[in-house]
Image 1: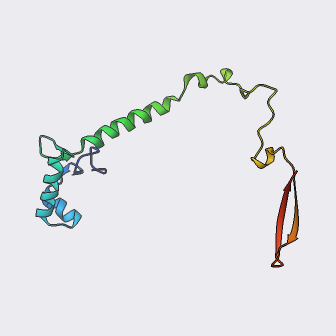
Image 2: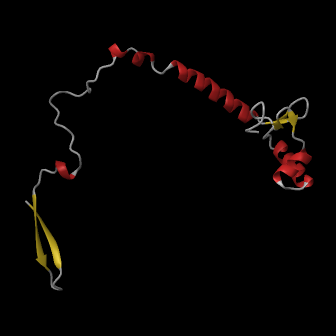
Image 3: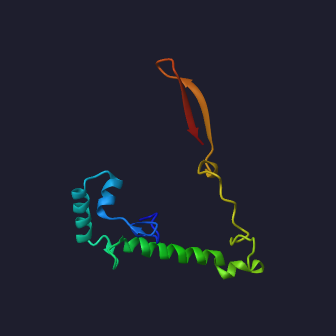
Length: 131
């Protein structure tokens, strides 16, 4: 149905795919495919057009939405941003704010010292002292 013409229809070119052909395509028996189709039709997953071709209402609706969004994308986005004279490169922050540090440890106001000491098992251990 994704490759059908039109999109969303169970067709190859202009030919409708019948359950017997669908069974050969998917490698299942005709009775299995007919059972699956009956179950999907009862659940309202697909519909049939006047000539009996299966189509997905959801796929057709989604394709219309995709096409309308694609055509809108060609026109551009926010009209206020299209006019380059209205866009400034300034950041909307007051001048008196300090810059944001790169990490939480960079902004720490406490200083620390570190030294290597040996513990009871003669292994080096790092001791950190906050001042």
